[in-house]
Amino acid sequence: MELMIQRLRQIKTALKPNKIWRIVFKRPAVQIYIIKVLLQDNQLQRHVTGLGTPITDKYTGSQTYSIFTEAITNGRKKAGTPYNLYDTGEFYESMKMLVGADYFEIIADPIKEDDNLYAKFGEEIVWLNEDSISKLTIYLVNQYRSAVREVLQIN
Image: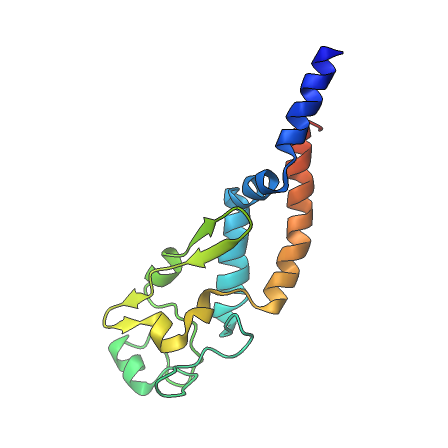
């Protein structure tokens, strides 16, 4: 009986929402899904910010690369194509997740040569938009189930 009570106390402690949150969001697969699939592939490669709006240069109002950009990138970026913020891959590779007790935040190094990408395009370039949040919600339900099973040691 004492063993059963001890196990129930362990379960009670382990099933605290903040603990499950951390278990889920510290998983590399979850972080890859959020950063690579949702943010980079579903948003930035589709030229969309976390506000659901096109990536727009705040200084010029442009939503596309210029002829100047095409020239300095030796044609890697074509004039008239929408911004995706991928050039050398440095910005994408700098993206990391900070996980708090009840939140997560995607951070990145916005400094690129002489530009600050956050100043130029807004910090919303690393936010998740409504579509990504909807996809993440569905994905997290399964991750939470798995984490609870793991904590309860249920196969």
